[in-house]
Image 1 (cartoon, rainbow, N blue to C red):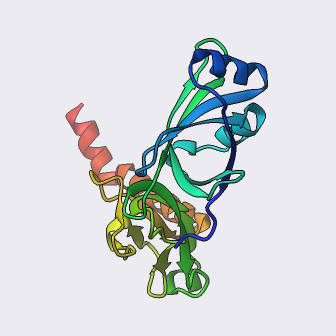
Image 2 (tube, rainbow, N blue to C red; image 1 turned 180 degrees about the vertical axis):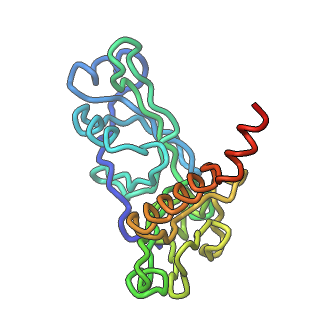
Length: 222
């Protein structure tokens, strides 16, 4: 289970409707609603600056939060909508959905690489290039893994590690299913690649240089 679920602080909003929402905005809050999870919907307020900071961190819509409201038990929620001002593009309302342990959620999980410094490819001078340091997975809200583990113990230079070659936690599956995307690869050093390219260019140039016989045939044809 993931141990670092970020908190999302809110307060109960007294009253509902457009009037209460406008008052919340005048007070420097963003009005919102929490629904689902077998409980009644609840009107809330989240401080504007606090929410804006959270939004600017990125991936707000695919992050599982621990909603904290004073006097109530914490509950896990995920954002299902952020309404914004059409001119300023600033948040004006937020919708949060409560999650049961059996609910499925799309969330980004970090990738942990084992034996990255001791695998054969790196020992031979290769360089590990991480393409994705986290992967979006479809998981159960009550069984979110802390990370995905990729063991590079047998990775050779030139090897590519794709999602199909990674053992995912039980019950988890990638959100992207239409392609076998790359997680990382072990590449040859740039100096080696440059030398190979130079050698290839020299071979091509040598093939293009006409021999003495070729020159005589060309003169004869003209």
